[in-house]
Length: 95
Length: 479
Image (cartoon, rainbow over all chains, first blue to last red; front, top):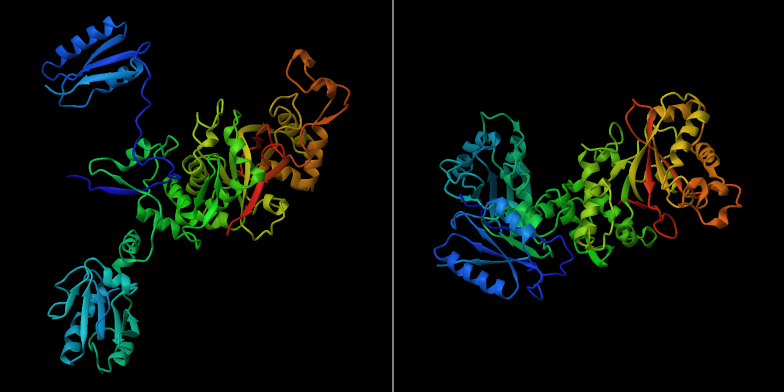
């Protein structure tokens, strides 16, 4: 059974957006680690492999990750590892 | 506002035995030609055989006409209520309806039951739906599949522990704990200097887990934290350990069942735990005081989740902290002390006040650093067994304070930098001062609390910038 939509009252001084703000974008990709996440959708790995090659040729650092199945959220161990090892992540969503 | 029709209106619910008892009366009144409309709260087929039953499923009629008991019989003439009866009382019903022998065979009197519209949790929902109350806070919608509690974490509203999700109904229930208007400004909360309304305090009090009756204490604590003398901004921003310690005095302690006895400084009492936490959440959420942001504490302390307790005034041999601060004994107060800790005072053997005072002074010497004087203030929490030693000898609180001050003198030669092979200490210029007091004249405070077994007292250490140069202890009346 689905829980109904609920309403909470904002406990803050309401000086920032009610929506979660996105993290600041890095100014440059050099010097940081770029995660390439294959979510196991067909041919996603092909796209990411080529993207990784192009990035490496530019002198950027990449790491490859793979989700066991696109149908489920990433295992905790995987997203914790990505968060520890990479500063940005590119994932290939659709086939 | 849903008006009642002319004539009699009867509010009932089927789950009320008195309403079931008087079910035959509906027919009797109809037979006598009485103009009667029945409002059934829970079952449209009740009372049986009645033609004019309005199913008050939304409880709007019941709410708008302030029904507290069922059955309630109301007589309306010229669109005005002229009479109201609650429960079943034959003589009153006969008098109001003008009918004799009403409900013959029934007992003469039966009290009613609670009306559904005043049931816990429902009252606030109805007020929000049909009442005049308007809450000003931004409404955050949580998607159907999302968890309210997790949303509070994601929004950054918590201290790291789960909070009670602040739904409008819970906030409204909390606001019933005070007569103050929701839009009244309580103070300007550092570090962002944001104006804080009673409603915002109520929202954070809900999240902390407070009951509505705690709200006046939380409001007074927030007011105290906003006083310039307390210097909440500096206390938050410091790299030091300290944070507001809330000490409650006066009749409110017993009214809201605060703990001043066994484990008084520990866990387990809802009022102690949640009042201190509510203040911390106001500073976090309204003031924007976030660890790693303006809160720069090197280590912090567990008291930054909550540190609130009540003084045991009833069993104390001395006047309370609030009386010392100039308030009458019958006045409830909160005192905010900029502190952290605690550090123990262990003494199982002393049976004379002189000896016990020496143990206390010995432990107090280590506060901040054995060579640093006139910096942090302290609150000494004296336990019943220790207090009994002073009481037996007839020592007043003032007498004990004088003794402690006199024992807590450090020679300048021993306190300066470099003395005792230790670089830390007072500036060299103090070397020729024969005796330097460890604490400022008003820097030692004493309260009485704790369980009846155990010859231990406690030092709550203050911020190193205690006093006029930083944060001063402040006391505020709870209204």
